Image (tube, rainbow, N blue to C red):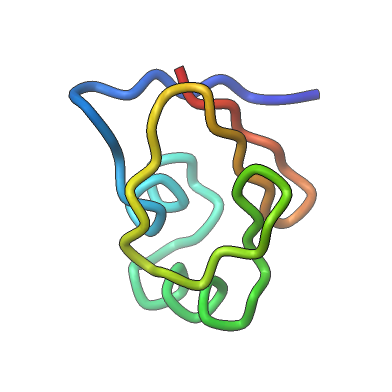
Length: 69
């Protein structure tokens, strides 16, 4: 089951999304997980910490799926 996340504004950065959803405890933890290739955006491994995510995209990390709206 996917969790919906409503973006305020045009986009949210990947590291900020992981923190906002409580999937990591800190920015450093988010950066480490992203750099290690543990995060997928729209089915592709994303290694850019500050990748700009927009409505309609899907993020998968640690068994959790987040759909951006």
